[in-house]
Length: 264
View 1 (cartoon, rainbow, N blue to C red):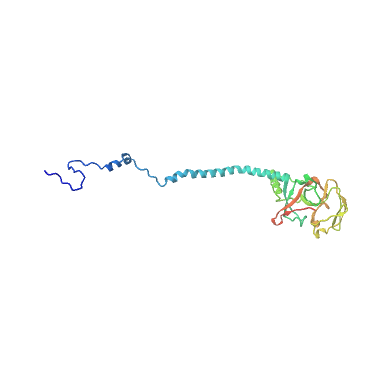
View 2: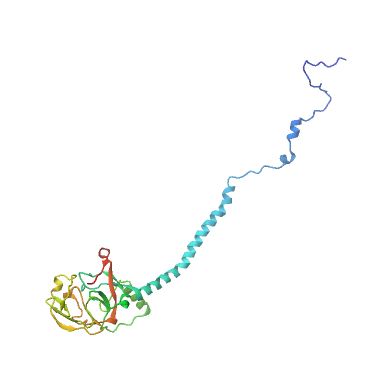
């Protein structure tokens, strides 16, 4: 039998038709049974959003807790503000409403002024000061229930309402021990005419007043609108120093009339 024939340059060994084929070396080296049996993990599109969900909810919860904490503290804050207002009204500053025209043109009806309640603990009233004082001859006051008394105190203290028969506002003209008179519309104190630049010419058209000496511990007061003012010339009489509430120092309402109030 003849030998198999090989082409020139063919280095491969002859193929034995009876031998079983062997698996390729490259395929055998890359095949991994574990990788073939373990499925790949696939990330679903909603997975990241679900993970972030709890953080967003936690943030909303903190805001809600902050709002609830504020609402719980609100009654305490209101109580503190009320107590501060009470202290200020009682000892420091109080608002008053002007109910009549007796101080025009300095103060008009409807003006609201602030009154310094401390200043006369430091010094006595001075000539030219605009003062608020209690009625030196008070009429019996009606009894009020607690709710009505509180409402009256609150509106009175805020300057919303003021009874014209309870508190008065006038200008200090004469001091304790001085002798005062009026002649042809001119006020004379201890023999010297008083310069009053705040008066209009109409306000000087008043009757004469005979000389009188102001008792110790009292003030002589007059309104700037002399022809339309019930003051120390008439039924109001002298004003005891212990009836003085304080000195009006500024108009706070209406906005067009906001200004400081000055004496002589």
